[in-house]
Length: 116
Length: 116
Image 1 (cartoon, each protein chain N blue to C red):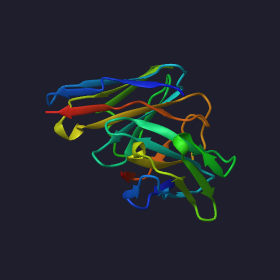
Image 2 (image 1 turned 60 degrees about the horizontal axis):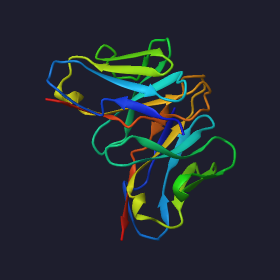
Image 3 (image 1 turned 180 degrees about the vertical axis):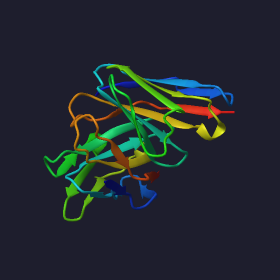
Image 4 (image 1 turned 90 degrees about the vertical axis):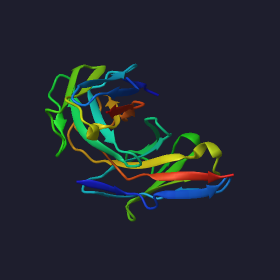
């Protein structure tokens, strides 16, 4: 079984400041880890994913995340926040073992607010 | 990236009626599709996983006779909410994935169901 914990349901940062959204995971097998962004009344858009290659993963819109096995973490960062980054962010883990049967387990989400 | 569409985007129906939601992969063959439900300000909860040509696998607590899923082709899956009631009102999101278990899930834009 796998689970994801996102620390902080709401995060506010000033425009131009560092964005740090925290995600810790639990998995009995090597995980695939994902970050998704959701804008109001829209579906989810993939920001980035970790699939056991490089531990530092770069995604779209200037976001990146680092997989740290020792800390079971996959925190999302962006050096400089932009107003358009305001949205809901979800961390997710997939750790299935059967072809065609993998499923994502999502965290509870973090709402990011950008202060002008 | 790959595109997944959902139709309709919004639907309002009377209690007791049935509603069908379509999920289509527009530019790739989706051997696996997932259906999620999202309550306001909450995370996504997986309802079921469907593989093309097979019966859907439902998550614990999800009534398979109420939420009928059909995945008859590699580009189309449907979710039918039968005898809908106000408690079924929610945001329903589908995702689709290609043949490889390492493929990314691509999410549709979601369908807002309101049952009066």
